[in-house]
Length: 82
Image (tube, rainbow, N blue to C red; front, side, top):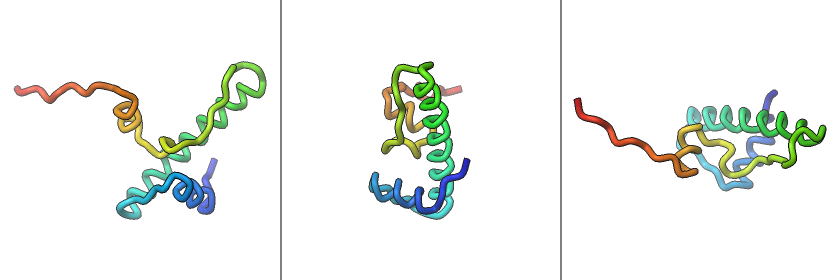
C-alpha cells in the first residue's frame, strides 16, 4: 500500500507536522504508511464483526514504536555502568 503525496501533505497539515529535513520526512512517512496499513487491516475485521471497535489515523500515526511507547507511559531503564 502506498501513501500519495497529497494524502501525506494532508496528514501533516491536519496535525500541524513539520520535520527537520527530507530524511526525517521520509522516515515519518514510512511510519505513517505502516500505521495506515494496521488501521485498514483492523477495520476490515471490525466491518466483518471480528472486532468490536474501529481504529483511525491520529496525531501519533507517524511515531516510531519507541516514541509511541514513551508517549504512552513506557518506562525506560537508566543506562548501567559496566
